[in-house]
Image (cartoon, rainbow, N blue to C red; front, side, top):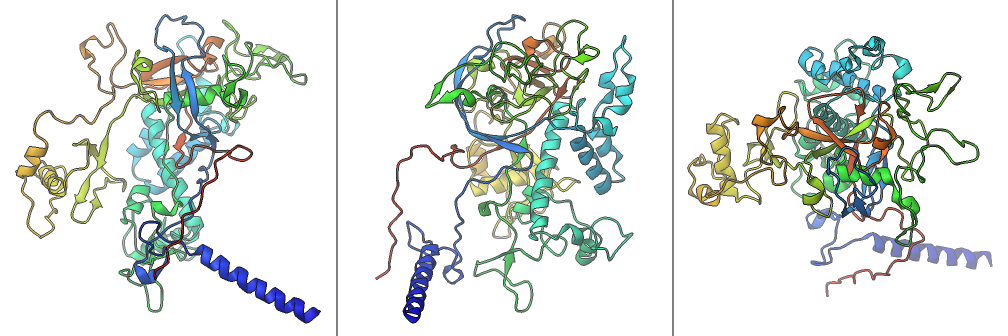
Length: 559
């Protein structure tokens, strides 16, 4: 009996192993070629899945809603939030506002990587002078608000729209760098810092010594383009390269390669949310929705028409940090109504139904859009946004696909010259035009080794007629700049900020309200949070919901 059971078990295990090995062998549905097989050319296919959000983000399942629909009055008579039904794709958003500690991390990185570049550090500093008022004693905040540990969890303020955008780009690179170093696909943090063997040699001691020359800080675009390779970058756990043309890195070692976007390891870029995304996320109507029926609308990020909690344990408590009335920023001593006078820690007050904190009050927040009074009437009804500025990464050598970089190792971006993919001959000719103008290195040659002709006829024909405008959606609308500051404060650099702040009345807590400020200005009432694109299926929580069944593709067998 025991022997029979053992033999049966072995047969079953063998059958299961065979079936599992067959199921793992994926093949192209169109050619029948096996994937992940180095003997047939190394075609790659990876498991298709929802990528996890980056650090600090929560998923926001998109859908349709009425942009501007939560505003029931227009007390400023701006007529700038006309209602329009739109669809928002699913995306990720920061659970909280970016805090002072987060910004200090940014400043610290600059100080250790560019200790002599005082301009870079200075440009990244928030404007702490925003706390000054002619008839107020706010000087302690000028000195303490950003750097004192007591305020480390408070939202950073005094940052301009330009600074917030720069922070998003920096955060993208640091998150991706940490993922790659922590998994050994780049040199680890210990190896990158010298591994304890080269104390006193400064940053990147071991890597720099191995490479022979200093190297640029990690940049996602440069890395994905294959421009950050070699001993200073390559980790010990890089991905095996199945390309038959790949070269081994050492005797007896399998060829390896950097991570590609197709691997699903690199995160999407952090960015500012669009105005429509921010308003949709603040309302969080998904919490009031069942079977596509919205049971109740909202005026604020919480349910109800009031600003106090209706729950038994917290009844009467203020739900956000705002100014209750003239001269009342905190309430009566002994029983402060919102527990704050200026800003409050970023995890204060109950989160909304998406799990987002302080989507009303505390600080207003920058969004990505360029301000126009008529934006809601003119934008698309899918993923509305105003402010597109199309750019291309400049090529230092088009024949090799090498990006030009600035002094910080980041790709140089130029205004787009075409609304569609250019022909290769046109691309080379455009590059020569840039070289002639002194905008690019003069190292570009045509594929056959001959220098490309700046006066290429194909280029002149393809770009003849009306010049292509890299701003196709309202960023550079015709505005009489001579009237700026006289009859209007709106220009091409006016950016939208949303939500009420600690110094605003309750009207501005409504997610549909919108204001604007110049992109290089800052305020003690304005901060920001980041967002990230969600790639793939928009459904975030499919469990327990009906779905159509689909058949797997039939496997092809060569006969």
